[in-house]
Length: 388
Ligand SMILES: Cc1ncc(COP(=O)(O)O)c(C=O)c1O
Image: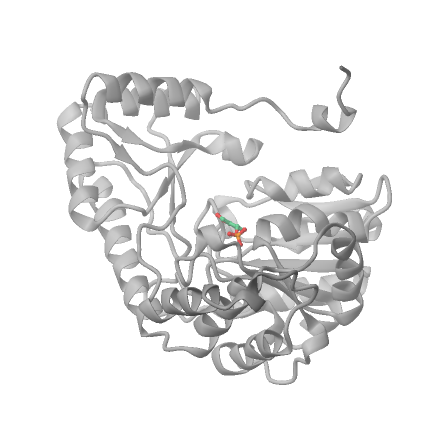
């Protein structure tokens, strides 16, 4: 059978050699430190789990939901006011998605026509490209460079590209590079977007994982943001509910309505039990979110500080659950370094080029193991002699 040409847009799985090595080392009984996948190892809070148990006992919650229930939309509106200081959202500005991944995968189908230009970060989270291509739009990558603290620099986007661009994805705190937005960067982006009539799609997956006393916020809290943009607001990482697939598209009502029109053709609404889970998370206590951020910071310190003490100059990540490290001299590619690192130390990380060409020469570590295990991983690297 000849399958859709659309599938040809997506490359082959580049991780197979890493996977093969991992399986081989596991067979040998080697100790592995898997810092490759960004799945949190923390627990969801008890009141969130209880909400699911209670909701599941009620047969009415097993029907098609067909819509976002007003209580859930209101919970998002109130959370934005309380947590982010974004005060005058309305329920029409809020729509659920089955995770930001799904939302980002579909949004460009609602926004773009073939050939429209969408600006994406490089390195960046892979679904940005996949969604753009599914929407038959054309990606144009803006680099996240070390000299700009891995932040978007709209001044460097050529004028003709800015004129042609339909949308721009901004994702801060950033996966994989661990940079965090500043008011200056957001204000520049908003002014640029207004001037060039570009829709900003802000992916806010890590607003609760920000270090060194900085408080994470929302793109929509900046003046003018609501006229130029929307934000994906995911509960996955803040509340450790990655498998539940709960996220929201929030912001400009015309954009939310367009994406809703598309999604309502292919989806009968979020499972009502999950809508109850979302309400519990958004209206309940959030002290665990703060404690867990401190733990992520301790892990960041253990990894970055530990690697620096071995002579590998890895800067502190500012936010997200990732550390972005330039590979040591002498390795021809990120992939070769990852394979060698795994072989000699049991530490597994992700080659930077899997996030885009500007990721070549870097690797990404996910802070998904407790401090003691990260310290053991650092010791394994030290003992291996890999760093000379
Ligand atoms: C930048 C970014 N956006 C979105 C997601 C996916 O979020 P969700 O679980 O809501 O689909 C991730 C997950 O790793 C991510 O790193």
